[in-house]
Image (tube, rainbow, N blue to C red):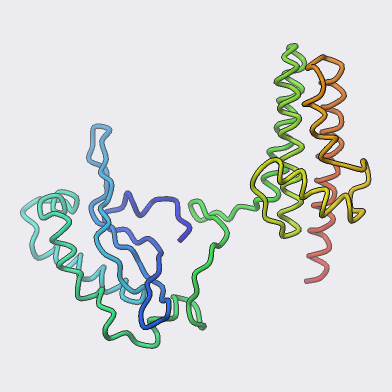
Length: 255
């Protein structure tokens, strides 16, 4: 289900999905046809044709390739062929494979799995590279610190304060995610950090992390405050980085 959108630009694309049949959920593929590069800076987005049980994916590919091999005109590319015959043609072609009347037990088990399928949101992917979100957030926080210093150096104190604030938010969100705490809004992140870290004695630099971060709302964007605020952000990001490294070490030792 987590994809880069490559299926939407493919000649034949498969997008992970699910179907319900007989009171159960089974893995499915949304079949897309007709994507590709047309030349001269133009491209074609594939059409969503039909949804089929995942285990029928190989049959879908056979149907489509055999159909193209049999019915294309001389020199006609697959992209040209799909545009000529149209989306409805492929829907009718693949409709028999979408039937849920004769499902087998294996249809309820996804490829490479042994247990029955269940829908879930997994870790995001991009071109096959798995992203460590916690480490990425801390890296972004360090980048915000650099931007903050650059802002202050050129006397853009308000911008410097804002980037320092962003560093606070990114790094605290990273630690919350590491603890399994899901958070979305910035206000929620500051509040949750106090609940899960400050109040549990995991962070002891202040009695209220939220109040420390939100000092920016009560102060004028002066050079003095910008410098002080940036230093506090630096100290916190260093704390977050160290906490993250210790947690990773503990996990490795446990394994």
